[in-house]
Image (tube, rainbow, N blue to C red):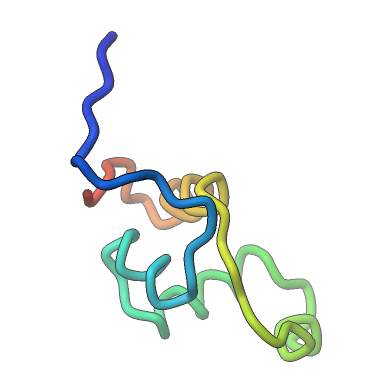
Length: 72
């Protein structure tokens, strides 16, 4: 199996906006997905001052969203 790249260098962290963009969804859809699949209590989400996503986080979120193909 051969993997192809898009020519973009890999990132080690993604902002909330970048993560939503990579997943092909809006920031609000990303937040809703996190609330329903990741966060146990709403207070947990409000305690996070800045959200950064790892590439592995995006993979899990992509699987949860049902979008199994990479957007880029």
